[in-house]
Image 1: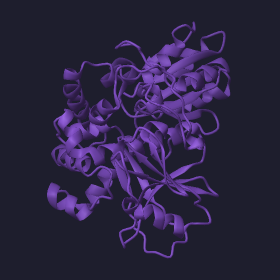
Image 2: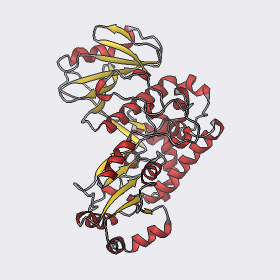
Image 3: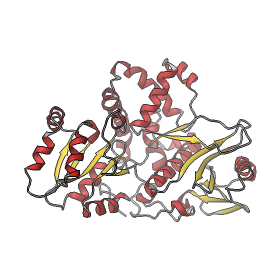
Image 4: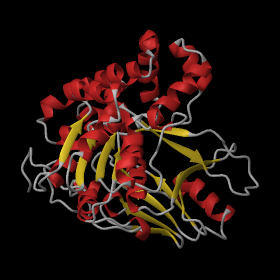
Length: 409
């Protein structure tokens, strides 16, 4: 068993090693505190000559904000091409023109990290297309926590890269899987997650010039956390928070852009049934979600919200695996106005795999009517369905439906 405070290996470790070996450039995006800086520093610590510019440092940030071209002038004094690590690169989007110049002139290769895609999407920002490789780092996956037993859905197959670290699946359902949280004593986890929420409000929201509306956004954030995993009712959220519906929609977009929320669209493909067309939103980490919803983070929480927490865990794991795989797999949900519903649809292009999530150990056929309905409706492209459960062993429910334990996903 790996001891606490030991840095866990990440699936992107080997990817980053290859990038550094080939002296390519990469931009690694991800929410705050998922371990981007730790990941990069672990890989560059034994590589001499790496220049670091952490833009969290106000002195360095102000220096480059005033004159982004200073980066070029500093690097041109070097006799040989060098490698540069710029942390929180989205803080100075204008710096990307200088980065492009140095890459094109073969004067440097870069490892860039960022925790907000919003500033990088502003009109006129140089996204270094064709010059850098893009990656996304999430909170810890099940295989990074050593929790997997096997994998059933082959295109998303994963293996453990760490042995068990003393952090259980129940811990994950309550506290999430941010690396720092995993390494803390249990008594310190809730205060740290509460501080995370405050840090997000202060740094990300104020950076978006919403400081006048910080109270309204804070109320929205609490409600959005409680509604996480649903297609939000904008009218109800507006009434409950005192924020206008257009503002609610813009706030959700802000959560997506700052990578605090994942958006899952409905599956609509030549269906004869009326389908819900609103997106669902999942906060990026269960622990952050629970903290923002002002829940008490203890064992009783699992008893009170077992179904919600289990669905979050499975959906987030699927999203993370899809991103990591690099395959063009899309994740949807399916729900008709008649009430038929499937939690997840994995779209592989020519085929789809429906996947229902049940937090029980046993599943009755009557509980998965939506799965049967989907398989009938899309029989040409959907051959087999799965139910992810809390059971300990797989079980064949029907000829084309298999129930699998969560750690066999």
